[in-house]
Length: 299
Image 1 (cartoon, rainbow, N blue to C red):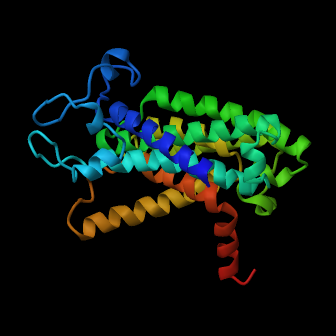
Image 2 (cartoon, rainbow, N blue to C red; image 1 turned 120 degrees about the vertical axis):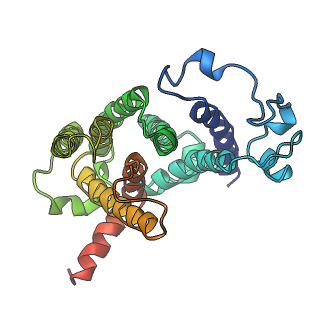
């Protein structure tokens, strides 16, 4: 448990850096532009440069009761939220994958697990960090930075490569899909790398058609590129379940906003947050979701 606490604290620190990337981003420059992310942090209202004890991830926000020490202005809850999510990613993803692949926590932290497994865990932590950045930026600016989508593609290539090790070294063919044995319900099942390639192709073509049909008003090309990346990451048929969940969640959210008067029918709603949430649900609960669906019909 101590190791996971340390991972959570490390994730808090990365979450603080993610806030810098998110809040200083605009579409004119690369999100990782040094000129953008360099420089001391300061209060968004009074511009006072923050001291080291005002920059402690999560703790500073709590101690200062969510206010600037100088001008007393209320700070955005995005700061502790993103930092906390960073901590949950760094601790939660390894914890889940250890259970999913049957690796004990003791073996993981003793570095006696298969050598490739640490690369797989690192790749998924990296992917979820990019998911966090994409979600926050698209929610704020209706933009999915191309460089973040490219990083997801790189993560997908790495994870698809690890799939071969999973199947051969661990003899677990269903472990290339988070739907586990329910992958056999879907047609055209392919093992390993081809599974991920199929997911990328299906995701790209489906969202490209939607973008063309809606002329970019319903689904933008940024969402098309994101669908390719997520399809490559999760493979087939996971991308199908992710897509279905994202539209259900997005639809319910949009209807809810209209019912309370926060949005109108023609107002824009960012899709990437729902796409990422669908991916998160499949990652952690994929087989349980499909099992529950079939249970409704008594199957």
